[in-house]
Length: 271
Image: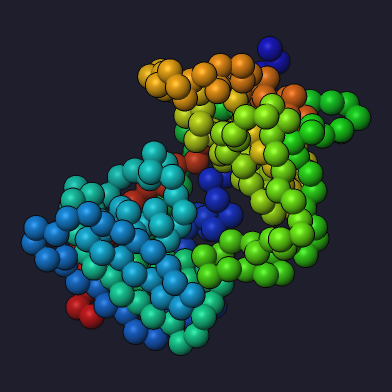
């Protein structure tokens, strides 16, 4: 196989070398960061239309949520960043887009925890996602979404799809392994990355929004129960499914993957 070096940028939000917050982003109107009560169980980090709420969350989980960083791509930092627990309540003056709230959360972490993040490119094996056909024809399980599919956004940032618009069904007849509505091809690559346990780089050049379904046999080394397995036994491998169902292909190569490093952090300042 021809080896091509590729570079994988983890997220568009990490555009600066220091992964810094954009200076034009406003702060939350009210923000509280407190140690969680001793013995608290479970944890959560969530956003509403105008607020950030975290319960019994570690600094690491707060960073992963605010910057949308995969757990295996965040490294470094003091040991307590993975063990100490905090409750965070931050409210904006009005409802805002989810990404703006995330940037405000980044600013909150920087100001209260003294958080400094840096980036580092590390070489490793990756897959690249490319068109499978010379004529660019797509597979039966993907179609372009309407240009206005993001006009209506639900509270969780999910596109509101009109009832008259039918959902795609898998050409295999099986339940999809995963699917997307009004999604980018980059999100397809991200889903494949999570399934394969290895980074997938979108090199399709396909822009805009898409609806898709993808069904393939389980990748887990522990097979599902026989009843569940019966309905999945005739499904193709992920590599065959991507080509036959989406009209794309996965090629393994050597590349660079970006890791985010916690360069500095301290216990949170007073509220």
